[in-house]
Amino acid sequence: MNGVDPRFESPVDRTIREAVERGDFDDLPGKGKPLPGAGRIGPVDENWWIRGYLEREGVPGDAMLPPSIQLRKELDRIDETVTRFVDERRVREHVEEVNSRVVDHMRHPMGPRVPIRRLDADEVVARWHAARERRRAAARPAAPPPATAETAPGSRRGWWARLFGR
Image (cartoon, rainbow, N blue to C red; front, side, top):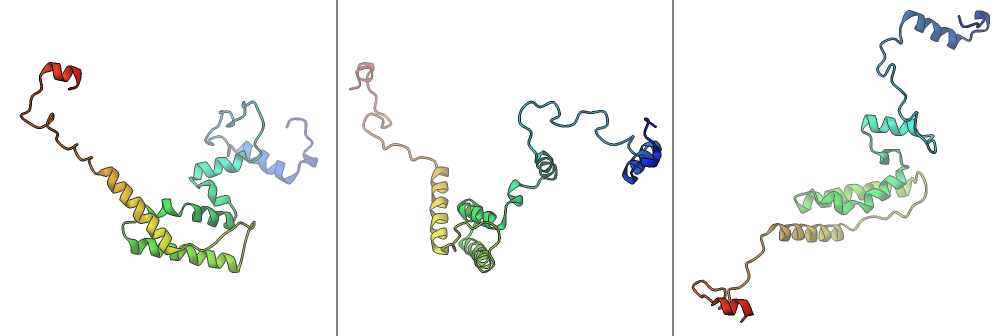
């Protein structure tokens, strides 16, 4: 037993030793493979394990932020959030829901103090309409240029006029 006197073995060490002897660790995934990032050169990130956990579980990094910062980020991204809604009623409902959380936060603030204020539903709806019109205009095909005497059907210019732009 590696020269360790069993009288001085801690209960944790004993449990691990017994599990190894039973073969409990023989079929673990990743056995025989290097630890992720073990050969990396450079500064060590002390939060590597939590970043790896969040990545494996598919949890966005914003989930670890304090509530006040999460709410502020949501307020800053409101225009991107409402673009997926198809009617004005749904945009207003979402703004009211966000505003109710803003009021709750103002009553019982948690986390660092960041400037947070209620949204004006009319302003959000106006920006939503403007963005919607921009998307519609971009999706429409461009109108053809008006016909001139040179480009009208049936008119033919000679090759000298085309060459010299007359």
